[in-house]
Amino acid sequence: MTDGLQYCWDDAGSAGEVRIGDVLLETYTVGPRPGQAPTLVLLHEGLGCVDLWRDFPQQLFTETGCGVFAYSRAGYGRSDPCPLPRPLDYMTREAVSVLPEVLDAIGFMDGVLIGHSDGASIAAIHAGARRDPRVRGVVLMAPHFFTEPMGLQAIAEARTAYADGDLRARLGKYHMHVDAAFRGWNDAWLDPGFEEWDIRHYLDEVAVPVMCLQGDHDQYGTRAQVDVVAQRARGPVSIRMIPDCRHSPHLEAPETVRAEIKAFLAGLAGGVALPNTGDSDA
Image 1 (spheres, rainbow, N blue to C red):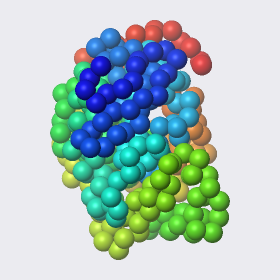
Image 2: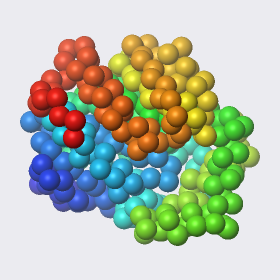
Image 3: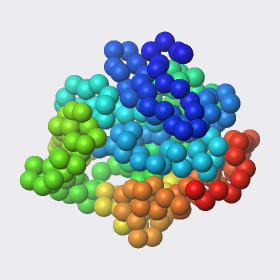
Image 4: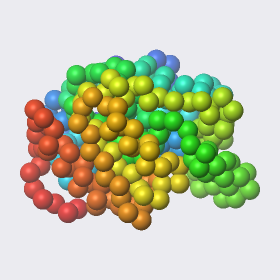
């Protein structure tokens, strides 16, 4: 067991925790440990956490045979809280400072970052800014690289739903510090200064293969958010627009997403060998 690391890898899945500096983060692991197979690292959305991946980690392991690691960032799920307000560059800070420490702590040796929404942006920033040779590719689900009026409007509507609807109660089932989790995300995105937020320049240094998965009815971003990856990334980029899908492809079109990820892993140059060569539909 690594210092500050309390969890185990097994085929049934295991909840645990990892300490990064003074902050305790909740984790979930399933499948073989790093070094025994490639590791898929899941980076959640702006209101996500370990539990909100639902059965996606287990299904990824079943489909690919890779180890899967997910963690809740500070302020989310059962992780320690984080100071508010969040800085407007909170995704960059996570990508260049926290995520590398997490990867080191789990003994990450070889694999792929799979991010959703904020987590996809964090994965892209990490790939461009850090260029960690252990990261063989990135999968970006519903990423965002710059603000769009329709996305900001949807985030403003979420604020209303949180104040006047049932969103707070629903999120409270998953986040110990629910007000901090929501405000940390929502207040940052609706800060007037955030309208100028733009991380496209990180894509210019992304040299690993990238897969983009986006719903064609995504309420938080248009196709421009994935087209910019193909326009600027240095490595090969594939884009799959998923019909009749909104902001959460892995939950709304899980079979399609798992099949795309499995094909992406199998096609990586130099080979991320899949331990499980079966064609399970589980």
